[in-house]
Each structure stands twice: as structure tokens, then as C-alpha cells.
Length: 356
Ligand code: PHE
Image (cartoon, rainbow, N blue to C red; front, side, top):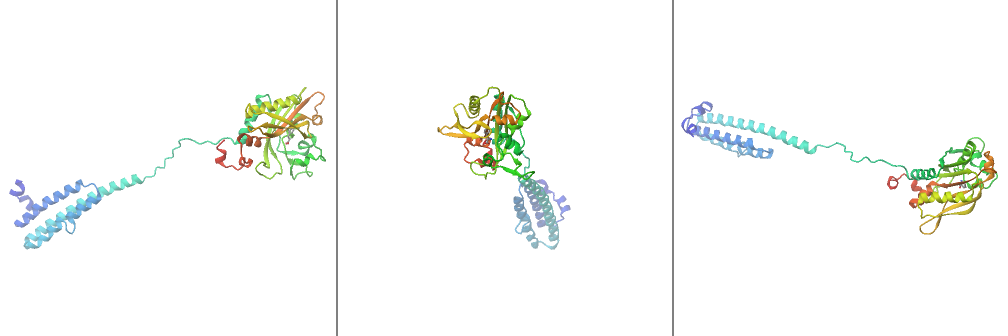
């Protein structure tokens, strides 16, 4: 190029090198610095930048090699060439430093992006709970009976001896009292206040407060001193049924039980009554339902309401008759879903409960 070969003037001003060797050093230096700058501008990683830095400024780098030639120059030329070299070194050092800062910032940004934690919470599908198996069974039973023309009645869980026993024709001396395994509450006279051992007290409360005809079901919690095992719970649920009307008999009871069992379990299920004994019904029966294997399972007790019970509630047995039934809702759920152990219903294991 004309400038570098013909006119060394401007370069001499910047690096006043006084002889041929000095001029050679100046020309070479200029192109070396340009070459280095071009490489540094294009480099894209800190590792490559370090390589380039080493190749120019390192121990065996080009500029360092040049410095070693200084010894062969005379004192004047050496000084000028030394200056020029030092300038070149500080220029390149500054350029490398600037490029390093840019690359370091970029790589830090990249790392931050890679390590960023996405804390956005995505609620794809909200998982809702659902009603407990026993509540579902109870609701369905209510639906079935309401569909048959019954209304739903309630009573307290803590009862007096009158409602739990006496009005139901179970006087104090009666051996049936013992069969109810009652949990008494320490209140008033001994054995006067108790957790109801069946839902039958709701029969009395309903008849005391309502004129016949009466068609009610009363689901609710009941309590006995039973220890929990595969077939018993000390706190369980029953549903009571009571019908009081004119000319009601055992046939109506059998028909009602058969209708509700078919509505709840399916039309293939059969029912039967077996003679039994309860002080508050006469005649009394246990009612069973058929299983696919041909066996019978006992579901509950029932019977024609005893005239003494009607009289206890101020209802004339000569005019009104009726039937009553009661059975365990928890047992019903056990049968319907063929559970191995009734305690599953109260273990509160979500893995179990979520299946129903
Ligand atoms: N209350 C009785 C029991 O818990 C069941 C029953 C209710 C029987 C109504 C007859 C009539 O065993």
C-alpha cells in the first residue's frame, strides 16, 4: 500500500522511530494491533478471548516476542520501539478488557436465564373433594324415601330414658335394655341421660308432635358401647322409618321395604322378613336382602307399631295403626360396596374414600 511503503511520516509522529528497524517494527506493530483488534471483535466466548489474549500478550505471544527483538536495536531506536510496543500492549489490553466485560455480561445473563426458577403456579384442574360414602348413602336413601312420599325427620343425639326406652315400651326392668349396650351420660339420675342407642326415639318425638297420618324417615347418628371391629362401630348411623295411618298392616311394611331395597340396590335384589322380637313392634321381624351368591344378609329390624307405643304418644290404636323399621346406614354402605371392614368408613384414608 502506498501509505505504508511511501510515506512513513504520520507514523513517525506517533511512534518516532528513528531507523529502518524501528520503521519495520512500527509497520508490523500497526498491522499486528489491527489483526488482534479484528479477532477480538469477532470472538464470541470468554475461552476464545483468553486464547487470543495469550497469542498476542502471553509469554510466547506475538507482542512479547517482539519485545525480545528490542535488544538488537541501538539505544535510540530501542527507546522508541519500546514505547510503541508498550502502547500496543496497553491498547490491546484495554480492547481485550472491554470485550471481556461484554462477553462476561452476556454469559452471566445466559446463566441467569438458564437457572431461572419458574414459580408460576398453573392450576390446570381444581381437584374438589366429595361427600363421604356414608353421606352419599344417606342422601340416596332420603331421595328414595322422599320419592315414596316420606318426609325427613330429626331428633337429638343425647336422649332421655323416656325417649330411648320407656315410651318405646322398654321399661326399666325390661331385659331388652341390656341388649342396647347404651352409653350413658353423667347427668341427672343414673342411667337417665344417654347417647341414643337407636333412631327409634325419633318415632316418639314425631308422634308426640304430629297428628297422623305420619310418613317419616329419620336418619342420624347412634351410639353403643361396642368396640370397633370389622363389623361394628361404636358411633354409627341408622335410618328409622315410621308410617301411621288407617288400616296399615304387615303387608304395607313388606311392600315398602321391598320397594326401597329395589330402588337402592337394584331390581334383581329380593327381600324377606324373619320373625324376631322388639318391645316396640308386634309382630316384629328382621328383614334380609338377597345377595348374588344366593345368601341372605340381615339389614335391619321392623314390625307393626305396638299399641302401647301409640298410647304413650296419645294416639288411639283403635283408629290408627302403623309400621316402623330401622337399619344401619354404614352397614348398608358396606354391603353395597362390598367392603371388607366397616372401619374403612372412619379411617379417613383419602385413597380409600376417593374411590367412591
Ligand atoms: N331400633 C331397632 C334397633 O336398633 C330397629 C327397629 C326399628 C326395629 C324400628 C323395629 C322397628 O335394633
